[in-house]
Image (cartoon, rainbow, N blue to C red; front, side, top):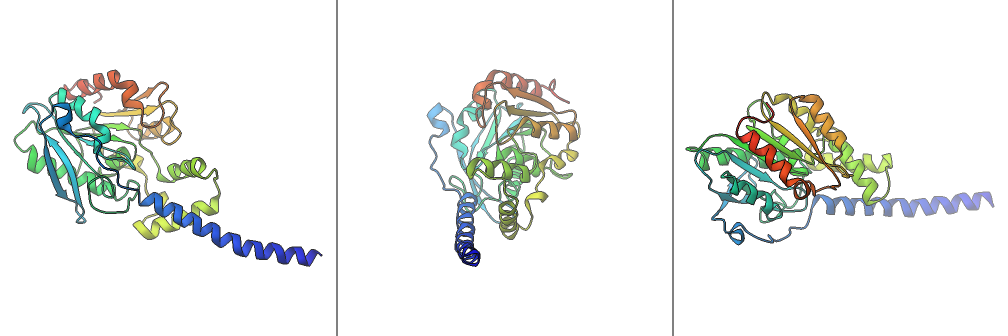
Length: 296
């Protein structure tokens, strides 16, 4: 009887385990190949004159975006969306900067919106998109303007913005909204939310797939470490009080590496809600930064 039970369980595991792994592979593949949603609006719907632009990344990916010309004596800003969305989802932020006189570039990440590509690196490959956007804005759109260019990144876009920073490429100011500090922790949080597990074996298996796709493991993607390149630049860290994906603890880790950064927590907000619930305080902070009276 005991042997029969063992044989049954062995056969059951032999069938279920491969099927489970296949299901995990399919799920993760969908996660790293998000559907491209159409743009839901455009600047002209808000009375804003704009230009459709396209530019290449350093690895040959064609990105699509909008450029809005601002006042000559005002800074420029790149508005950067998160995972599974596109530039049109940030139209309220774009409109805010337009009203403040900023020149604005907003683009779709690879594998999002109207840009090329089908696979996301969850911030790692997107850092190349951010770098290319900054160089494009500075060299082709703002060469005769104020010269100061900052970034407003949300969610994955915020993490990619910091990952893009190194000793040779630094924004003049950073507005970081809901960034993960370490990809490994972000993946673990997503696993708990999506499939209700923190199984180490599943994590290791996904990490193996990710490394095959991107050449780095989850543990190698640590935006907080790039804070060491930021010197005397204003950094505003924005976190939602009830965010289960990018927690206030992430902000504290960024702040630990760059103590001059200012951290604000938007009460009652969940992931992606910080701007809409904290618009007034965020705009106030941005004004101070652009006028040189914000964080150092």
